[in-house]
Image (cartoon, rainbow, N blue to C red):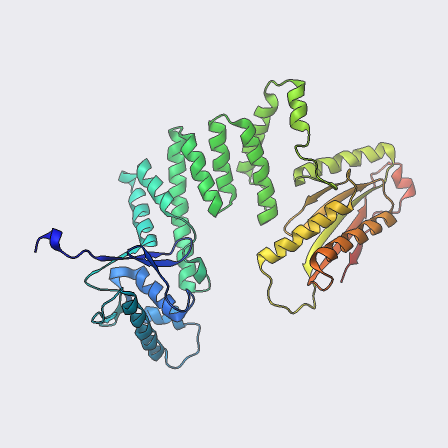
Length: 423
């Protein structure tokens, strides 16, 4: 029979990168039970292994290893029966097709073509990384095909967790090779786009460095400076990490270039001014807070003013036995704490986020009883936002700051620590 007259094969497309979905000839299929059901997990295993198939032993290890069941083989037969029934009803398989052939399980049908994104990425990456094939186009294609973590919905399955790490490392290898190639050819526009694509998936220090290198290569120094500021804040707030030595090198290079450029006093003044004046205290990065702290410590040597360093921490109450809180719920509560801090301090006071659940404040010219009043305001505003019966508590730590030889040292008590817990 001529090739042109042969019946066109059905195409079963399975997405496993950045999510999970199934489509037959472009039409989305919904298998009952969701991605976490035994039937769906069995289908994912079969689709992942493709024509090669998967052994009965491996399926049992992947699906039933964590369960104490005396009849795993019987359960597998039931899951196979249910899966085939669904696939026949959806038009994926024919009633005469068999999933099990001599102990090897696969999705096989004469008129079916299986297309799995992770296998396509794996093939493209392998080809791009071959020494004789390290071409820009192949590396670009491989990087573009990786759209997110492998099967994120199966992060509780050990086999999937191992594959997640393996494919992430393969992706990073492709990206590094591609960025090196682009940098050597001074293709900074593509380099910038690639770095930002990676950062959307993995906001790691290494990719912030690549983003800055691209901006530096294009001479976009002011944008690089703004990007460096956002990068360090993101690393501190989202991951609690200090910038690496490589990132700090880029920041120093950018700052020296921007500061060394010729600008009028009016231009400089415009850069220094606040772009948006918000109600409440002044929020700054940790680096800026550190500079302010050191300046105020020097100043009180001359003025004798009081100075307090305050740390506010948000935690769950120890006696709370509710369900485990999601990261988004906790982050929302932290933002409510930030609003309470900002609106409870004076406009000239300075604060910064320190780690995932903490805020540092610097209070000048107050008495210790004033600090107590401020924390009553913080607690009140926070409770109004989250409710008095919430599962959170605020812990406060106060230190009066005294420098050796300052006037304040004669009138203030020695450095002490106090803790106030709101239940």
